[in-house]
Length: 198
Image (cartoon, rainbow, N blue to C red; front, side, top):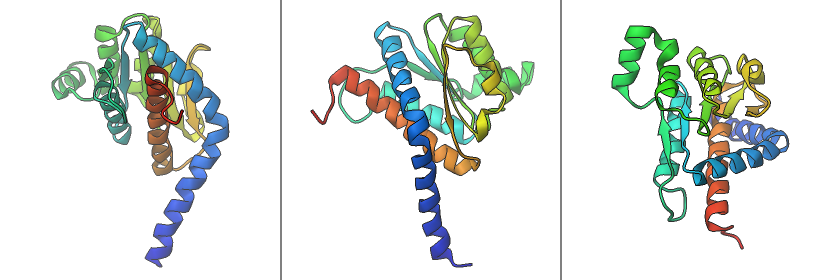
C-alpha cells in the first residue's frame, strides 16, 4: 500500500463529494438559511440531534450559534439534544434509545422552533422519531442525510428542507455535512450582520 497515494486520494474524494453537492444543495441551503434566520429573529429556537459523528456535528453547529461563528454578535438560541448524558441515559434506560431525541423534542420543542436532524444513512430510528415529534409540534425540519436519504426521505413534509449529500461513503458525507453547517452559520451571520465581502 502506498500511504502517500492513499492520503492524497482522500483529498480528491472529499473534493469530489463537495463538488457533487454544490449544484443540488446550494438552493436548499439558501432556503434553510432563510428559515433559520426567521426562526431566530422571531425568538424561536433551533434544536439539533444526531448519533456518533452526527452528534458531534449537531454540537458543533449549536456551539457556533450560541457562541459565535466568525464575527461578534449576540448569542443565538440553540440546543443540541445529544449532550445531556443524564437525559440520554435516563430516557434510554426507561423508554429505549430510540426515544432519546423524541422525548426531548416533546419537552422542549415549541411551534415555530426548527429541528436540525442529522443522519448520514437517513435511517437512524431515534432521529426519525424526533422528526415525527417535531411535526406534531408544528416545527419544520432541516434534515442532513446521505446515501439517498434513507427512511427520512419518506417522513419529511413538503415544508421541510432536505440536504441529502449525493454520496455513499459515511466519512465523505460527514465531511460535506460540516461544510453545510458552516454554510448555514455563514448565511445567518450575513443576514444578521451584512455580507463580510461587501
